[in-house]
Length: 76
Image (cartoon, rainbow, N blue to C red; front, side, top):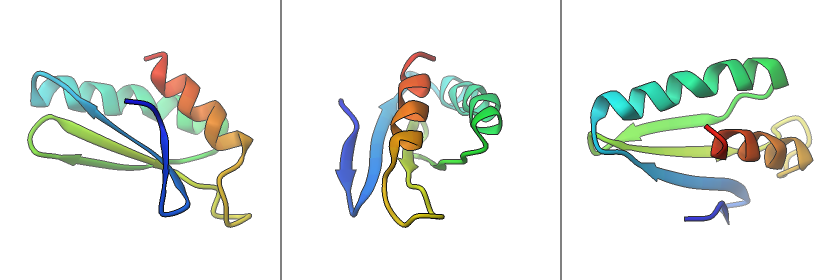
């Protein structure tokens, strides 16, 4: 699945084989978000699905900062 604009936010859902894999993925996002000083909304649900939402709250829209972090998340 590609990143999509849903409700004016850049969104993607990732599916893993286990709860542990999903949580490990989330933990790998943390240093990227901290380095970028840009923090996604992260929703772990259905045992092994992770939904990521990116949005630049300071300007009220999706920006290049969101797309850059999305690319880094995809590279995990």
